[in-house]
Image (cartoon, rainbow, N blue to C red; front, side):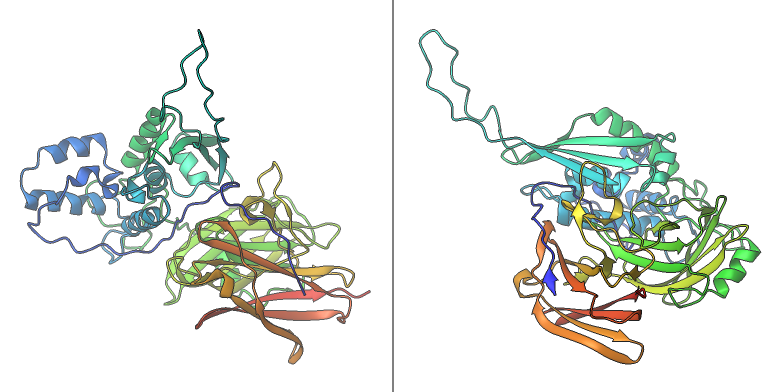
Length: 497
């Protein structure tokens, strides 16, 4: 096996920002006064102008504590339950912003990038341009201009453009007027220890819009007894929609195997590109068909329904296949750290397929956090076009959606690791099984992690298939970081000659 060639993407490429739906709110103590003006804190980024005006009229700590309690409750999409999904989302964004965007003594959530992240969430992609080094100042000449004053020009600024698009952030764009896309440009000045937004007025306009629309329970009325929460206007919580009875039956009977007798293949992946965890579920369909509907249901480890999906199925371009025809249907899910069962069904005039899988979304605050195993025919350059969810620094790694390879090909397997204790000491072990038989094993061997963004690493290895017989295989990869281990698996098929 040979390690994939990667070049480090430090200081370039795109950076994603963390977004996990987890976190806890410290209990509010009645009568406790604020050590600071809470309305200027990251927790209060969703205050409307009316709420800010009301806050200024409050005189006592008890009044302010009650105000903060109402602030969260008015934005709780499942009022009356123990969990406030909006609050957990925002507090976790703050936690991760603090870890990702600190500048000097300023906490990450209080920087401009942190503030935009807390309000808008993870961008679809980030483009960064770093200014080149300045030339050494020339000595003044008689009658010429004076030399530049020291400190007036940085020379090491970075321009960072956060891009939100309809493909990966459709709900955000729908809430700010159905824009086709949104770009927020920052200027980072390391020497001055600050970052700034180039068009702060535009951001403030959209923040006010989202702050108003984040209020889903202005009168603190519990949701209907049916248990269906009201729609979250700010779209910060995964929505739950009604599923047709036929779709429910299909999801209840979904197969557990990735490959179906009808030639469809179901796959999942939890990755974080350059930053936050993103969960993807997809179907490979051997026969394309117009007018397909995608239905889905996600349950947590306790069996509770986290979110449901019912929408037109749209083909995705981010995958590779071994088939001459066919298409891939994909769905992105925003899930917090934990273990889930995801079930999806595709239904049309000819197509009827459903499958389920168990996934684990790692906590990036843990050490280490390991992504899903990505099986691919190889990596390529991301190029000028966005590589989608499977772009890592300068590399694009399209998963083999149908999980099928020819014996003349090589299978490449990739894994991401976040926050390893010692990146140079991380090792891999592999086992290859066909049915009940183990047909190969390797390791432990160095992972050779390459940093693709701050604290995020990628490794990839090639496995030639020419010596293997046609059939179905399972590849197990154990990632070991000191005493910590994580086991990942990937299913694939080798076609006959």
